[in-house]
Image 1 (cartoon, rainbow, N blue to C red):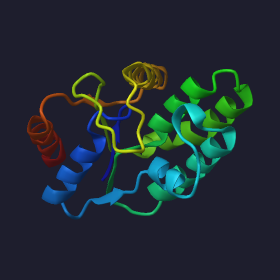
Image 2 (image 1 turned 60 degrees about the horizontal axis):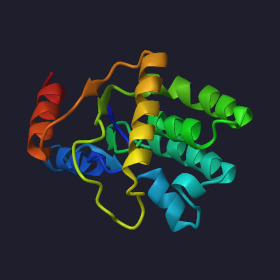
Image 3 (image 1 turned 30 degrees about the vertical axis):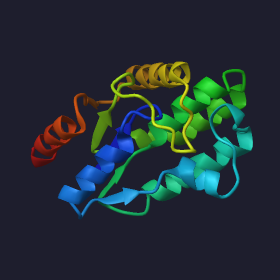
Image 4 (image 1 turned 120 degrees about the vertical axis):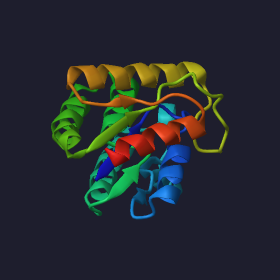
Length: 172
């Protein structure tokens, strides 16, 4: 089973992925491509370049192809949302990203959407804490879900409530 946890920065994706892994250790947590990009020197969010996005596309595809049973706190869906928001005038990048990423959406067995506005954004030194940016990315994600008719489950509530909902989904 491949579980994609999607949402803007700071909505609790990593927390939920870690909780799932704790209760289901056979689900490997995929590293977050954006954090890996930052580690090798790429700028993220509003300072990202086209080169950053191309690196992220390659890395996300590589990560998602490594295991048969995983949970990811980022996915090709999120990546496409960030590209649409950050590079709206770069039609060649958007076209390439769409053709490359959209076919991979069907690989997800379960898509868990965590909406923005549930928690304050914690500053971890990597993610941007701008609420307007978070809301803009959230809207892009919702637009992609709708446009590509991606089946998803909206997960809200406290971290404990979220995990309870996900455990019921995994059992079914």
